[in-house]
Length: 275
Image (cartoon, rainbow, N blue to C red; front, side):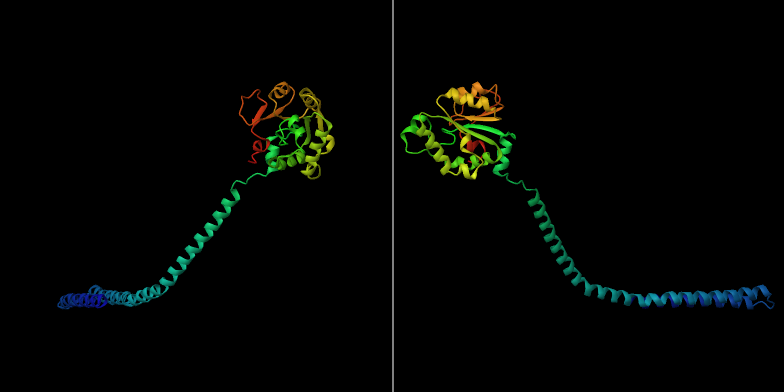
């Protein structure tokens, strides 16, 4: 419809221009004498009209065909729009899924890893290489030499066994205790052997020391010069605080810290976070 209107307007313009040209030519030929310049002007005007008409015609041709091209382009776009939309949609889903997998992999990679018991032991002992430890109430269930005498056998605390074995792998460990007789010594050695301390760990029987007094145990510690000493007697810990780098006071009740290098814990396994 728009194409037909443009064509009619162009024809009307040419008709009006032709009428105007007819009038002008008539005026020119009304004179009896025409010079060469007047004839040249008329010829030039005619050539200009023809040239203008042909130019307008060449420009109007593509314009008439342009809507068809646009229509075909529009139809082809309409045909391909839906597959593209599906492709973009599926591509977006794939991209989101891939991003999610990458994010999960990154989160898993940077997720804090729970340290092993060996790592905890090394960290807690501050890389100490030699450790001395009393037996009663720390390694054994029994709490005194007198209690050990009345039982048929000593008992190693099952909850501390894993920590004890790990310490023997990493440190030079010495166990010591005050006993009242040789039979008590044999009970302790038998309990440690039955628990697998001498086979699974790095402990040997020669590193299990016995004495008859509390002072004797304190002397053992000073002679061995360990990096750590573990005990339940606060008096011994206080006496050794000047000589031993670190000490651990094992006590079920929380007490005031006697020195800066003396730590406290309800049990050995709790100190290493096993409970």
